[in-house]
Image (cartoon, rainbow, N blue to C red):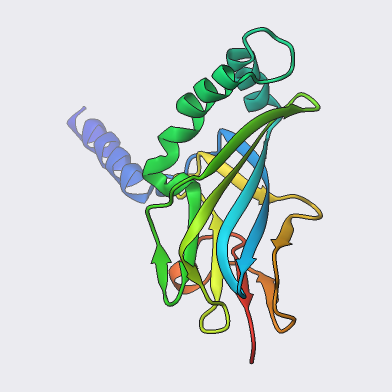
Length: 196
């Protein structure tokens, strides 16, 4: 009997030791995103994002915040939606990652926020200033939407996901590719380079 117990315990210990590591959690929210780079004097001065949410999250959030069910968020409804669902993201910089002038920018502030319902989907739009403005002719500017905890899965819209507002130098080029180095793990950062 003792030999059987020892064999079972040994097998259990071996199974726990050889078990695969915990996989990352599956996302709970899916977002189709668009980004607009805002320029002044050939510098990036701001970024505007449009997030279109998946059916399930949209349905739940719209039901909770469009109190009168008219398909339009009133100002009080929009304030409540922002306070409940968007402002808590401040600790993760709203999942917005920006690299400019050789380093990562942190502590983003939102200067505009709106929410609307389009074809039964929740759409939020927000802007954040790039302070100080970044000069892409000196150093590339990279932007990524990424949740390292994988609760939110960000993907760009199939077309028209990248916009420009203001004067863009003709020597500037955008590149979308899997992140490397400091951006490792980021699926599709957008990098802007100008000149040379």
